[in-house]
Length: 74
Image 1 (cartoon, rainbow, N blue to C red):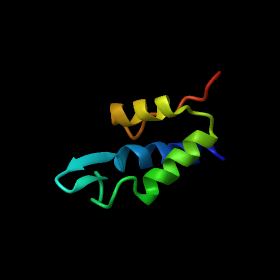
Image 2: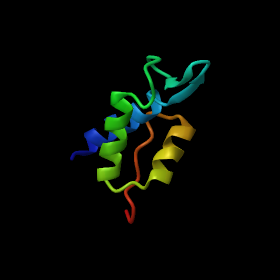
Image 3: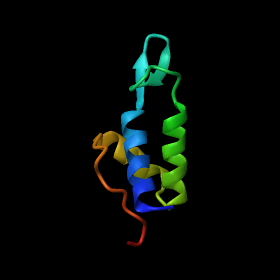
Image 4: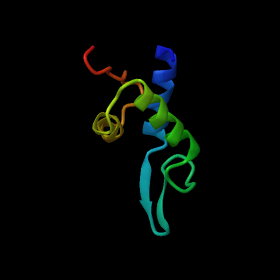
């Protein structure tokens, strides 16, 4: 897995974040049911890179798709 993969993964989880809607929770980007395919992919890549769920949630909360992911212990 490359650094570029991690950058795309951060972008995927931030851009495809959950959004509350009258019919339930949907993808903020395309209104498909959340978690959408790209959000799931991004979470999987970041998890494989060693980021805990809390750090992934913090990336989503900050909402900056250009923020680099931090590897634990790095």
